[in-house]
Amino acid sequence: MFTDVTTAADTFPTTTPRPSFLLVHGAWHRSGCWDLVREALTADGWTARTIDLPSAGPQRTPAAGMYDDADAIAAHLGQAGGPVIVVGHSYGGLPLTQAAAGPPAAAHLVYLAAYLPEEGESLLSIHGHGGGTDEDLHGTAPVVFHDPRTALFGDLPDEQAEEAVGRLVPQSRRSFQQRVTRAGWRTVPSTYVLCERDKALPPALQERMSARAGHVERLDTGHSPFLSTPAELAALLGRIGSRCDPRGHRPRRT
Image 1: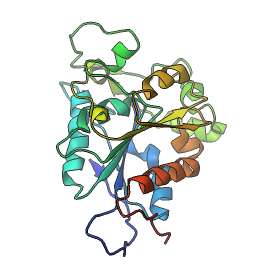
Image 2 (image 1 turned 135 degrees about the vertical axis):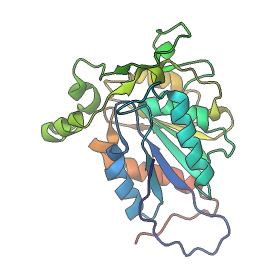
Image 3 (image 1 turned 90 degrees about the vertical axis):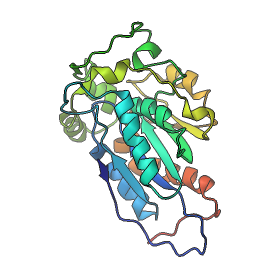
Image 4 (image 1 turned 60 degrees about the vertical axis):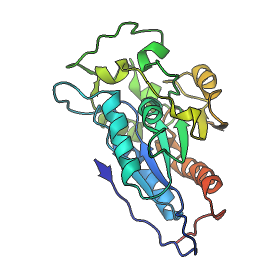
């Protein structure tokens, strides 16, 4: 399911559309976590959309997995009608990697404190677990952190953090078990945004994975800058978008 947002009018005389953004949430989240960043991008003249991944929330049988999430991303790329910068947060980096090679391919990949896997890796295997091939077709995983408020939202004020924790949903176990078969970052330009105070995805692991990206940016935040510093994150994404804009223009403010 896609959530469309208002698009600022674009009057640049060109046949090449400006890139749009697709914002992909991580495990246990839904697309609403991006609202503040989406609104900031829209205010700066960008088109930004979000997507609800099938693996997060109530599950059918069999449960949705990483490949279902990748199919949902690929469907958006096929319907976009122009270049798309896909931003994946945390777990979202896995289906982003699977889907991005296309066709149609994404224009640019942004890994925000995200998993950036090699072919054959899953979320569990990156952490040294899940060596088998069996998939849990039924189970869901509650938030695995002993203290999700600290791990995920440690740099948010208490009230905002409590609200964010209250919006978390179950995640299918299958999504953590399925292995990437295509690494889109091998053919699509990419940027890794490393969150230096992350308590959920260790910065040392982010450093290792970020070496696969074409460019690295850093934020002095915890795991969820879309909530803690949405304006700063939106500005960074805007700069990345401007570098990807074939017309060489920043979007106009409206």
